[in-house]
Every structure is written in structure tokens, then in C-alpha cells.
Length: 336
Image (cartoon, rainbow, N blue to C red; front, side, top):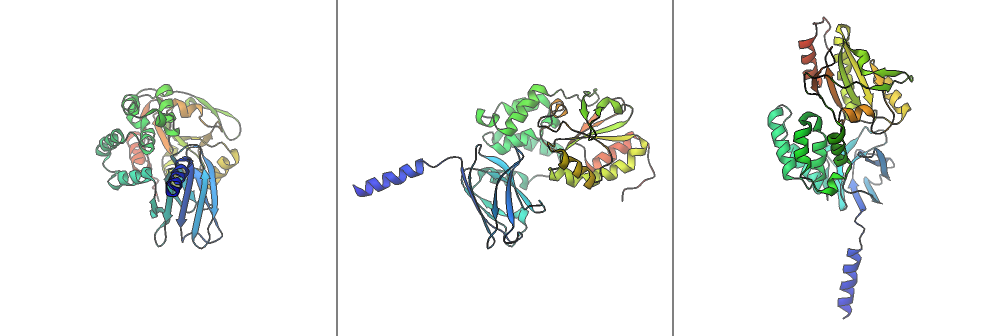
């Protein structure tokens, strides 16, 4: 009888485990002992919790409102970071002897799913990968990673394809942060097709002046969505600056829309990255332009011709320079 009671007690303890409890342990050698590791919620853009590294170990234990979620594990200045899908399991992290970004992570099915997806991802085969990505989302419609992947592609795929894929997800995932972004896109996005006129809007620049997209009519415009806290955006900025300097004298302009909510961080990033173009922001979540253009992830952009018609979406690097060379007079300036 005593054995039965103990067994029942143990089962009861297990059944009472808080589903939102999160335990995360790890081993690192790129972070010095005594320094902080920070876990940051990328959906809500807020710090979840912190841990001090001791003897190359770290430990997080906390309760989270919504699981799973997408987070960044990073040091204090974000010079070392890793994206992680967090679930309500006991998770582990080990980067001993390897690059921090290549750490082995256990306890998250979502994280494993993302790793499996990107193993065969080839950015050079856009059409083929578009088909594979849609198929992947359709087959894994019970995954938060899948609906996140969908939210990152809505501008490229458009309303019709997005609506079909979105319909496959359960209510719980539709209510998640990326699910809501897809839903907002389907409700509010008025994306023009290539060759159609874009939607005008008005926002405020860093000096408090009102700026309209139509103020730049007659120029070739890159409508660039970014934020100071967005690491891929900051990585892209030096390349974008070179492109701007090459084509600016021929009528190329950039109107940058920041998703920042903190003005000091926004202005600091503009100065640090030497961004010479016009900047605007509502300094709040869910800006007007963000909703109008169905922006669900950054960096994102829209290339617009001199007559305010859409040329293309999410064009970066060499592809952007090649496109500008096609539609604008050549210049003697060379990219260094």
C-alpha cells in the first residue's frame, strides 16, 4: 500500500508541473565568467530573464506566459548571440569548443524543425525554395516555426497564397504573435502588384517634421523597414549605404521606416551606422506604414519607381544594385 501511495504522490507531482515553467541550462566558453547572458523575447522585443556565467555554466528558470516562443540568447552588447525556439521542456545549450551560433540545443522540437528546414535551404534557387517552403509549412502546420516562416513571406507570396496556408493552422497558433501578424496582413494589407501604384502615407522624422512618401515622387525610392535592435538590419546597413552613395546623384532615395519605440536608440543607431537618408517612425508598435505594407518581419523593403509604382519587394545587395542599374542612368562611382 505504501508503495502505491508513493507512486500516486509522484504522479500527482508530475501532473501539477506548470506547463509554462521554463528551465534552461547551458555550457559556454565564449562568455567570460561573471558576465551576463540575456534571454530576449523577439516577438515582444523585451528581456525575459538574465543569468551570470559561473564556471562556464549558465542557468535560467522562470515562468513564461506564452510558449513556445522565439528568443535570442546574447551577451550584454549583443556581439555574441544565438536565436532559439523556446518550449516548456528542460532545454540545454552547449557551445564548448564550437562557435556560439553553432551550439548544440536539446529539448525544443521547434528548434530542431528549424535546423532541419535550413539544412537544405539554398538562397540561389528562389523559385525552387519557394515551392519547398510552402510545402514545408503545409506539412508542419502544428508548429510555431511554420507560422513564423509564413509571416516572413506574406509580402512575397501575397494574399491568396498566404490565406490558403494560414487556414491550415490551429486556433492556438493563429493567436500567437506571428499568427496575429499574418492575420493583420490578411485584414489590412493593400499591397499593390508590380507595376501598380503604391499607397501614400505620412509619418514623423527625427526632428518632428511630417514626411509623406509622395514627397519623393520623381525619384526612385527604396522604402526600407528596419529597427535599431534588428541585428540583420544593422548588418545590411553598410551595404545599403554603399548602394545609396553609388546611385543617389542619379535620383535614388531611401525612406527608412523604423519599428523602434525608443527614440534615443533609434537616433543613436542612425548616427552610428552613418545613415544619410530620410528617417521616419511612429515610435510605437504597429505603425501605419507597417500595417499598410503588411510588414511582418524586418529587414524588409519596397522598391518604387519615379511614378510611384511598385518595382519589387525585399530586394537586397547585388540584386538591388543590378535592378537600379537597369532603371537608372549609369554612374562613374564604383562600390568599394
